[in-house]
Image 1: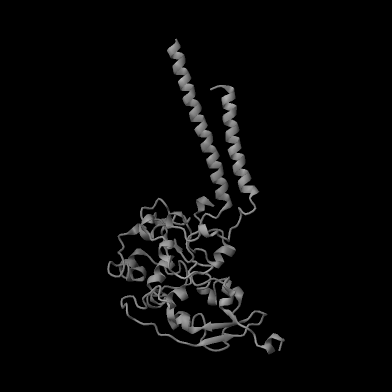
Image 2: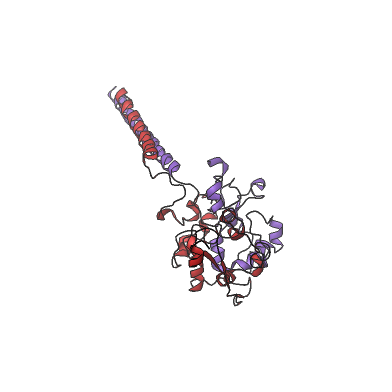
Length: 153
Length: 193
């Protein structure tokens, strides 16, 4: 009888601890939500281009092109004059066939100038659903709040 | 579980929720969509809000701060003064895809544009632009290479036309007024002549 009571007390203590931790978790989640609503979520680099012409439909993550990384290594002219990239996010209709045939990204990402196309997830790295955009652009900041994946807006 | 224990736990949970609500509503600085504190600038890809942290490749990407450490500062964009970084040889971007020694074809010609409003006139330097770009990037599609042939307004630039094809997207943004509006108007012009 005594032992049964002891077991019941221990179980109660355990239940109490579980409830306390649940309450703590709740409080933490509340604070986290508050922090989330007060600060911008998307804050990637200025000039990062998200390209989502075909990716979402094909079940791939959209592409993020980091301008800053490339301008450290190449002048604008190399891509925008020699390789024919238009000054327009999503305006180049790039697909994997063009890339493996050496056009656009494929002019360098061929295993000779830069790493090759088998590293899918180095480019296809955006949160699914992220729309095509020039991240942090003046136009985006002024007009369009739709820079995040549809699910998190 | 006794009643009082439950009450205590509910109180803790309610206090947590309340604290959260007060934090979000009570801090006058909590809403600041366009101004990022220095600690939030140049975040690593996994924390930047557009890269998927669950993507295996995300952690393999170079973090901006690892690259920007020694580059000259700027107050906007990537917080890097790219023109200065190139001038001072902090970076050596190739001018040709394959030839690491190819040199840019520079053109040293300033175009002064007298602006209609009260702002200082604009000096457009071909030199800094031809360091990065080819003539064909701008001429003739964006700018007709003829004096007086190009109407330019800040509204167009902000909407991504003319200078705004790059400035406000990848080159320094339009908040850097004085980098273009750099020449004081002559006394006659200032007097309204």
